[in-house]
Image 1: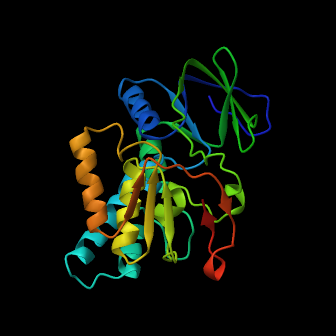
Image 2: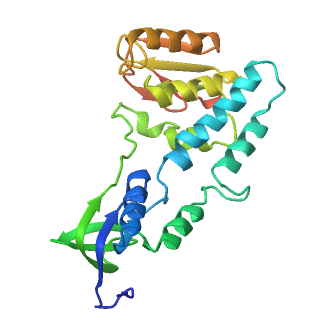
Length: 255
């Protein structure tokens, strides 16, 4: 049964899945393999962050940075173009293209909805650009919405030129300098990438070591590798405030 936007008709499915990242995609394909009817909705990228602003672009950039560190004449433009190829982003577009993920779901027989999914009752989901455009009924509702980047509430930071992992993995131009707040896997990866392409880079971790979830020996090896790549590694310190545009040439200052 199908529903049209703005109509009172309700589409019924065995599964309504909110979120089309790796978990949502896997659930949709597994359900279809077992003959269940499936609706899947996402307001941003089908495929989630990994293929678009996470694992795939970061590893592509790390590959280019490693080749440059080994002495190869590997430019940022070359690394950026290869990254765009890997995330399926055309040269004239700002965003990656997730159409291959959409086609895969549609070929499997899932009904794809682009928009925000909202649970409005038992077994009832509304989907649309702002919620509420389509009404779906489902015997099972799967919530697989993933996570969202959160900028820390540091005084003045909202006025500065702030990047999240999205901007860091999709940038086409090198920044003049870079301060990475947080020494987890993504922060360490991006710090090494930009340092190896000649960007003055500092990474700040409030705890006593980088990679706090890993074994201390691993964290020590990561810190040593970053320093060898030219990263200024600072642990046991915390960013207190930011002053937008008050540094040399309009750079932001973080205390």
